Amino acid sequence: MAGNKAIIFDLDGTLIDSLEDIAVCMNQVLKELNLPYYEIEDYKYFVGGGISILVDNALDKDIAQEIKDEVTSRFKEVYDQKLHKKTLPYEGIYELLDELEKLDFKIGILSNKPHEFTVQYANNLFSKYNMPEVHGQKEEIPKKPNPIAAINIANIFQTPCEEVYFVGDTMVDMQTAKNAGMIAVGVLWGFRDEKELRDNGADFIVSKPSEIIDLLKA
Image (tube, rainbow, N blue to C red; front, side):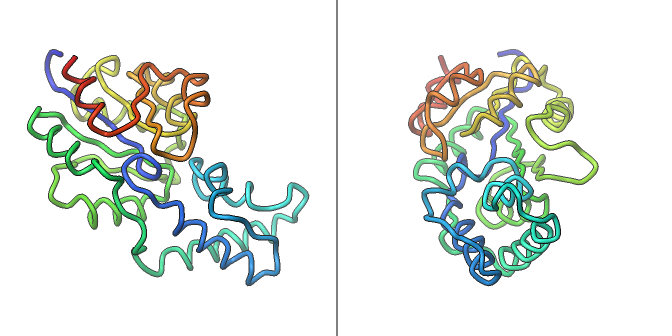
């Protein structure tokens, strides 16, 4: 690969396993408001699109907008009270990042988690790595699968989009990669299955982090 080698990661379900903490916080809010709540596993299908999609998925289709707004703001309060103890990198992620640095890859993060949470987790869990571009959802930039934020990262890294690897665990990530003209790498340790990743354009599927290095070296 010529020039600057670059890789962009999704955060939740790709680098970090945050499902239980998100589920516990959302269930706390739903219980407070006397709304139905869910099993942790159910949340695998609720996350990946940012807070607004999480709230839409957790609430009944016909529920009033005021209740949606209340759930959204309360979730942000509950979730943002601390860095969550159970949210940790998946096994093999630190070794993957060590190898990427040895291979001289520029590393970015692009999440639909709100920007301030995304930066907080990157600073807390990945501070030893050089990750100059860490971006969560910002009001002024459309969220994934819109490709603009991914393309912006590629431009900053001075790497053509078709040479950038985009790694994620949901259809939103695969669609982002395809929309940006990047190489779509779907991971099987996250929140969704192989069929969803392949149906949405995954160029490669990996079942553990070390396989990403094999792929980059191939």
